[in-house]
Image 1 (spheres, rainbow, N blue to C red):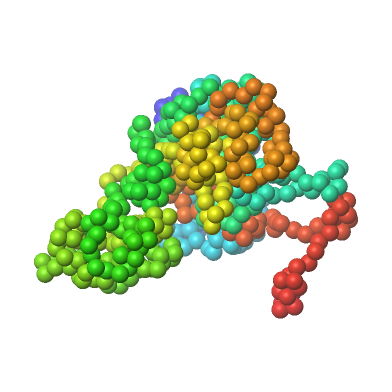
Image 2 (tube, rainbow, N blue to C red):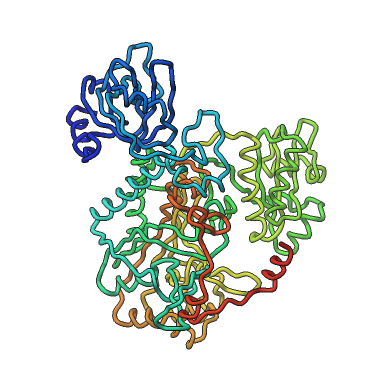
Length: 608
């Protein structure tokens, strides 16, 4: 940092209380008189000398108190300081002697010699520690979430939230440079089926009626396209009342983008450029252009629509290679229309039986009845499948000496998730080195519909434009209809989904009918969108990227809760403020509501 940069920082940081932030002090500030303020990180009493590590958002600095430079009352006061007290000190920056420098601190070349001390706020004994030695374990997460004000003082959490701020700022700047306009859409909106349950908000003004919190701004941004805002974005708050995992929160933030008069290529190129700019802020490499593969190709090669391309372990089709293998499990599945698919793990014969059983456990957890395997040595093949293989079968499968074949037989919709679940476990078991550090990918041409037990649902959402070649299949073979839809994937994580949208109201109605909606229901739920499309809608499309998930992956955090200031637990509870809570009878009456106690609640109460 240049001297002018340092001066600029000092000017920005100066307030009526302090002259600068503590983490910016360097050897070049030797002799500067300053007024610093912050929290007592820790205190050390060395007899006549006292040392306090003073902390604010910018970092730490060592503050020294001694009889030669600190007034008597302040020196006495310093001896009574407790952790997390808020203090103000006035004094002089001084270089530390060479032997006393601390290379682990950015300010380790200097200390701050305090002439006076003022205690701005006494702190109670903290329920959880803010200062930890490097090897200390964190307190239990539930306890940390209950005392989030203290937890958020940890430098590692503050660093993640500061990085999040910088990433969001880069998103805004990039999209502004490319002609996008930020528009806020409503939080109180209308319930529409988008794949998850809505959070409902009762209305006092209209008793018995409800708003919904938006699962996404999808319909509003499409209406904005009809309105002539040809490039829109929003850092949007979204809400979904669904079961939670480490990568889910009931409320979350997404980068919402939509543009008119565009094709798939426009969106992909814009978003690649945006993510490259955002990744650079985080020190992440994002070489352009990102690789692309269709959904069919991703499922065929990796069994997943979000494959982790850091490793090249791919699924093989061994149906033909095992066509004359006399093994009942294989024969019955192939005769029923399935395929034989699996991985060839080079040097995998070194895995123990216990390790292979662990891999089988991953397949079973994904719904597989088991996992077939064969090892090849100089003496032939072994294992449940191996004893049925001849050398020519092993050769056709590419199974070399020292190798291991992991095999699943059945329909693709079964074997793909089974093998996808096994793949990362194989990588871990073999300690495979990645071929690249950052695996960026576009997956394109998703199916418009998912089908399970004869019931159709929208793969992304019901507004995806069907591929022009597949529109004729909507009613006769909807499961075969491809969409102009695409997902951005990073290291096996879906960062975002998007599509070109249906801009023709009659086609939109057809798609909704295929999903099982009657015209009356379509008009009730989507009438305002269809009406807008009929007003003259341009071709348009966009994408929504998960901001929380991007920060989580870029910071290698275990959970989204580490990159959200005030997160919910996996039970959707906010422990810091104690939400949700019950409300009084008067409030319920004003809303026209009453609570119906479930049989389960009564049973739980009796048990308690």
